[in-house]
Length: 428
Image 1 (cartoon, rainbow, N blue to C red):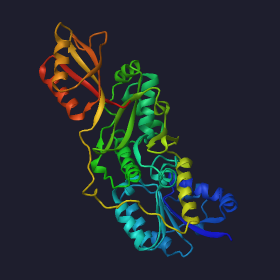
Image 2 (tube, rainbow, N blue to C red):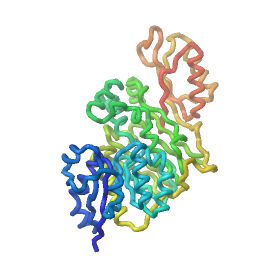
Image 3 (cartoon, rainbow, N blue to C red):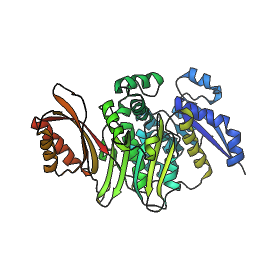
């Protein structure tokens, strides 16, 4: 027997427009393969020209959210507005009206899923958000329904297409950060205000969602160490490649005996690592489970149709499953009291210094590292003066604590014999 399901879409921008297009064009395909007839009953968007361009019939255009929620034919509400203002108001209203919600809004889910899920449970409706993380890559469905046999030990992901595009250009074309950012904005890969992407907020929200699911405990975004790419220098990328490393902005989560590490920052990884070959606006997540070992998911991290693929996947899942799945952990605003977070995490480090080109300097530098308990793997003086009589010195350390690396950098800067120009964490 064919099941009929009505959908409303709130916001017909890039993702909403792609969702509308996919649902309309594939309606017969879903009827044939999924035995469900999904119809777009209502759309809500203030831009009438956009609705006209997409071919939305007049009778499907809603004047306000009340009209959407009052329609008995609407079973699922898709939110693709973005942000945490009107989107939160509309999603809350939809859940209170016992409508299942599908959203692509990572900031909303990251900051308010605990509130929204409570309302959904009370009203016996679903809250789905596959499209909130990593575009068309089915990472959330994999965590829920693919690798649930495992204790997930770690995850590393390239989860932001804008920063990956910028770092790819800097790596292979030797272009300056500011120059590539302007190009990315011109091409539409970066917003006019790129802060959310380049300063790591977007990746931080996604890591909060994904690590909570992977480790089955709430990981608030406030517990995540965050550092963006705006200070990355193209010369460090070039020096790193000489050591066999590629630079990526990684979202990293580790569930260790000492506690949970969650961090977002530029990271050198071996150029042989599968994530090193993920370029341009593509995304990937690399998982390690105790049974499955390593798994990597790769694909388009953004865009109208790739993200719409994830939205519609949730719509179909909600339409074809009577049992509703909620979080596998206590989804509160804060972490549980018994969960430990590791802030002084361990990593290897790439450190570039500008030092005086004279006898005895190298011994003093290595002496400072030694007093801070840091063991050096390799130290290389690069040719050519950087600033008058100063020359670049690049150090690769063994694994050490974050605070030890910061302490060494502070002592070197205070010594008068050198200046730390760059500190980049290294994951082997």
